[in-house]
Length: 421
Image (cartoon, rainbow, N blue to C red):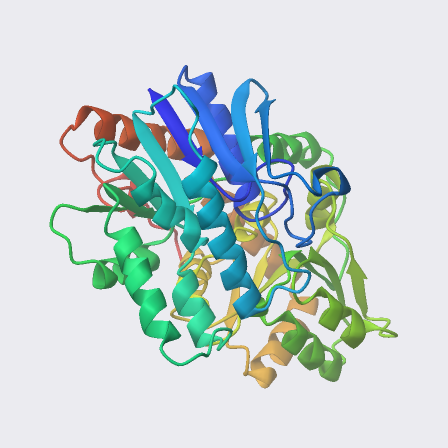
């Protein structure tokens, strides 16, 4: 197949979808498909272009044999709601004008949300040519932005929701990454000819290989060490947790390895606090080492918006057998996943006594932490790269050949594997 992948995040970006979509492109290439990628210049998670990319509107290059078009997108120095909307609009304009490869027509197109621009672009680029499109919903970005009041202008919410519905309903297949998000997608989209399916994220190849390399010689876990590693944006609500954590005086140390829109606020709030360490995003080897040393992995979500996404940082924690402290709403995708998996604790962000009690209990319960670790490793097998990327390939083949739709991963044996509680 000839496959056109449209993604704002791609190598050498780090975190979130960057590693996943780079890995997806590699997998499809290795399977013998003609894959081409349109994206932007590296900017994530620092929200800053690299110096060598400044002033360039278009660059055509090759990434490991995969043709790649990089288009200039407005990247704000501070990612506020309105500026993110302008960034999205600039990417949409660039995609409409220059996303396609001259003299080459794809059999299928893949794009992804959270950037609404690339969801809208997939509807416009090959208009009238009958090319089927797979759209992956990683994040309900419009709902999150409006619920966080990042975009609070009269009339804007209705316009954004209509644009989201217009973009999503135009796809041939919509896929999303958790059963809860699939249920929400079904409520949003009532289109009898549109296939909706659940295919989870996966542990990408290089990270999986690094975990395997370090696992056999892993050190003992350091006591009372809580690790947060990943994006530090508004929807994570990490600065609020930092204030709560400091007030607990729990005897734990919190290490934050991250970058993003809230990093400066975190720097201000953690200055001079000996029990909180703020570090940069690390490479994969150091990241895996940090997870293997940590007592537990911290994942935070701001209340009110956690129904809109499932953090990708969960999967490396599972693969390294690191217990999870999920500070989120119990009925969110993250809350349900951790509760059902039985490899950690789920606590509402406002429940200070429960957070304090959990940290106190975990200090004196080494056998329970070992049990959490074993369940995390067991659950990680569900997110194996080969199984999930094969599902994506099969979806694309079904689109291309107009086959009878395949069963979703939440139907039948693959998606109904129960994890003991």
